[in-house]
Amino acid sequence: MVCHEIRQIYKKLYKEFGPQDWWPVIGNKTNSKFEIMIGTILTQNTSWKNVEKAIINLSKEKLISPIKIISSKKIKKCIHPAGYYNQKYNYLIELSRWYLKNKDKINQMKTKELKEELLSIKGVGPETADSIILYAFNRPVFVVDAYTKRFLERHKLIQRSEMSDYYAVQNIFHRCYSKLSQDEKVRIYKEYHALIVELGKRYCRKKPNCDNCPIKYM
DNA sequence: TCCCAGGGGCCGA
DNA sequence: TCGGCCCATGGG
Image 1 (cartoon, rainbow, N blue to C red):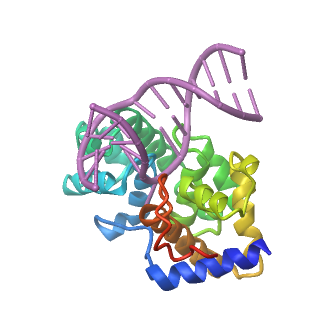
Image 2 (cartoon, rainbow, N blue to C red):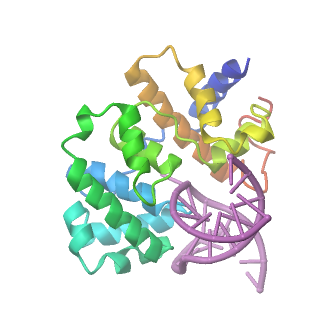
């Protein structure tokens, strides 16, 4: 019952908003994987507009590489617009060190192993890890964020008590698309998460704006 | 002036 | 384990 609704909502949002084409890559496409990884840290509790400014600064200075992140003195200044720049600077260093050490092994890692590796990095929690796994490494995991929990709760698709359990929320989506191929899962998970973010920005805000919401009656 | 944004670490109960 | 606090800029 829940799955039927989850799949219908996806179709409705896609029809309404169109393809979101995530993750947005701003700088040189040859560094896109690492740029996505940086972006997942920078966007923690931060609007994407501010993250864009930071990534443009880094890109102009040609600093979107793990070695440059670790060695350049300009990083903090570049990421300043994204906020929390002291914390995020340290997180980016940790992430870069991990990437330099592991980048040749990642393709051989199973998804579960990759997840555990990412979670061992200071500054990488469940959402950030899953964003990296899905958008940088194209593995099928659903990314759960505050918008996801909010719209599920408002549509009574989860109990309030489940909201604090990241993996309970994630499993709802994994269950509903379990029969798809790996590639199809990756495609749907990427698109669905992006569509939920768009829904959250336009309609399912903290202060709800339900009047013209495309899934008002779903 | 206040609220909020594509979280996560840390600490005390 | 879990709630509360801290981190910070920029737009509405």
